[in-house]
Length: 168
Image: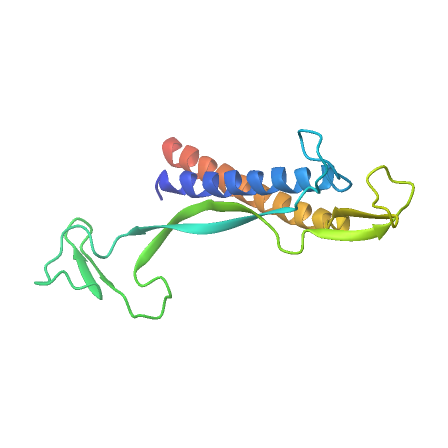
């Protein structure tokens, strides 16, 4: 166990917080038909993409293999032989957390509804609105909230284990 575990949990919490903020923005703008400067324009729903942060443990550090073979590595500090069987898709990279890759606008951002009383309706009575489904957004919010909570519990458990180890 190392303090790297805290970094992994914290990166997950940060990523989920960004996702919850983005979802909250989408919900808040569900009926927005104007841009921030007041001109006519529909709010475009945003979504968050995550990616793993990898640290290459196999190709760095001491090795007693002549070509520093990425399929196997001997660590003289621990005395362990690490063998990459090729089963894992990450090819010997160890995940050290998650990061927000980007916040991007979704495709099909507009839905058109008939509402002749709306101030931004066209001459036929149709108005363009953001294509945001509040139910889907709430499901995503609950999911992100649970993931945030899970990472928080992991961090708390690590803290508890370190505290117990110190007491020994």
